[in-house]
Structure formats: C-alpha cells, structure tokens
Image (cartoon, rainbow, N blue to C red; front, top):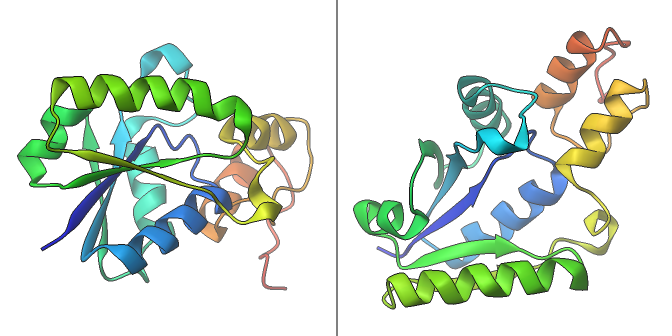
Length: 166
C-alpha cells in the first residue's frame, strides 16, 4: 500500500490544504493528515481541536485519516510505513524553506520521498495565518475554509454563523 503523510499545524485547515489533500488522495492508497505539535506558532486551536476540526472536514474522504504527532517527521513517517511526505507550495517564497526541509528529511532518512504539490490558483494566496487574521477582524472566511472550521471560527469570534451552503 502506498502511504503519504501530509504534515502541518493546520491552525486551521484551509481549502488550500483541502485541495492538496484531494490531489494526494488520487496518487496514494492512503493519506494521513498529520497535525503537528508546534507551540512556537502560538496556535488559535488546541491540538485536540485541530484534529477534531480536520477529521470533521475530511470525513467524506475514505482514504484520508487524521493523526497527531510531535518530534521528527521522518521518524513518524517510518512508524506509519509511509513512502512519501506531501508538502504544499503556494508561491516561490515557500520554496526555499520547503526545499531545506526536504533536504534535511532526506539526509535523516533517504527512504522517504518529499513530493511538492501546488493548490489550485485560487488558493495560492491563502494561509492559515491570513484566515485567522481576517476572521478575528470580522471578515467573511466562508470561501477559504471547510464548513466545520467556518462554524467554529464564527462562534469563537462572535460572527454570524450562517451556513456557507445558504
């Protein structure tokens, strides 16, 4: 079975992440969305909330699961039996950092491949940080995040909680 790990803090998961996950699911038998512990990013959501929101947002995708991890990504990938790590690239500015990570991961374990995937053009500007900021300031983020995340952020910021399907 071909297994890929898509790691990130996912604070929150955006439609750009969702697009990359859908593309990865076409290439692999199973994709694990691995929610990373990264307290240095000062997350809006706890690890449990991020995992729960990701699970709700990805519930329709049969070959995708959500897990949490901390420590070295390559160690986690080996534990899971993964052949690849998926990394999303939005813009050229992402490339240098992602390239360095990929080279370090290859140095640590050359049996795991890193695959860079780009989201659809309409999501290339989108980041979790930007979604949090727009939501905090009262902006409409419905088109940027899956419905469970929109509802949770709207409640957290006291915004209108109309369904995005209305």
